[in-house]
Image 1 (cartoon, helix red, strand yellow):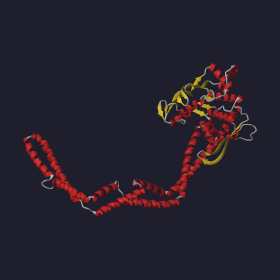
Image 2: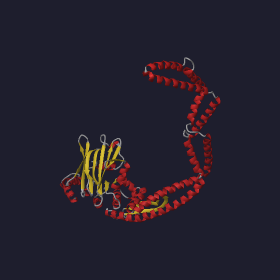
Image 3: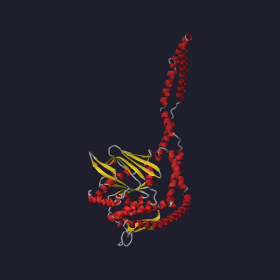
Image 4: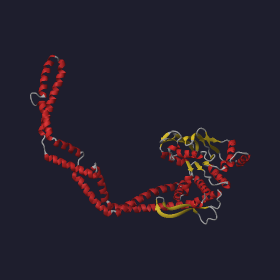
Length: 529
């Protein structure tokens, strides 16, 4: 059950904490007082979409505390330019919150009413009802969907193989040509970079030969060379160090430099001698670079990766004939499986639909729709991800209707509300959800019908916590927890939320019933209580 809801800076609500109880909780107040803001906050903290327009100031905060089977769960959300969820204080994602929501609470709003009316959703509602009663049906549906998706995937592959077989032969020839073209080129890793570097050397060979020889000559070429000068310096320092040992370090450095320069000079000389201008080599390098660049333009910068992709595609196509036989066998096996499971699912649906429609009719009778006939139509249709059934909820609300027809075409607004309540009441017996929120489900009803709706919600609230927005004094009078919402106009509009004691509850019931509080409306409120 929902124990409490804390809201701060959300839409018009600056700050409030609402405590809920077991049983029947109602939210009441004048139209536009802000009751729906409370439900919206609860919806948002449990994963519904939120935007910056909902934030009063910089940051909005919402925290919901639930208790189920003695375990307390705290879900919070902060909304600003982004949203942050926490579950029991631990940063969480929206998917985790939505998973918890499905186990904790169900909000019935106008949007959900539309969901119940729309025929395409009826099969999902029926399946959810059956799954809650029979875990084996839940597993059957799960396995069927997985098998069906595999079945459709194999069917598509098989169709493509058959339709494109001739086109594949042409593609195989072209792939073979592409693979041969890449293989014949025999491109090595980093070859283009190495070739460009070698081409630069070859193109500058004459200049490199001359410059390297000049450097050699300057170092070691004649009596005025650097090495000769350093040799003289060495002899000088050598003589001086024989007198003062402190110069031995300097002498060692000069000696090493002398030897290093000699080695460098010899290397330059050998390098200059080895260089030859080879026009044929330059042409060969240019041709090789051009080939690599051509293949890169054709196949992309990573030729090796593209070759792997081409080979993979080639292997797929060349194994086509074997794949065709294999796929046909797999398809037959999967076809048998999905049809068998679809038949099992249909049997479940027909049996449980018969039970469900009787239970809903019983609830409709208690909700002052005594002549209502509720029917769940089950027809075989084309195999799909949902099986081979077309499911639709039909209703006849009075004796003048010849036969049940779609909900949206027959039921009025007040009747739709009662059908929704009947379905919720029946579903509540199988759901593990401990809290149901009704957002003005009593719209379009009054009098005896309101009393029937009240009795229905009271019955459900014995096992399931009910939170209900209502404008009906008959319904509000029986609340275990009476929450009054009203607007306060100070500097800015704010919302005031109060948990009413017996005296205040009587006053507000009188206000709802009569518009004003006087002895007549107070007496009427007492009779309701």
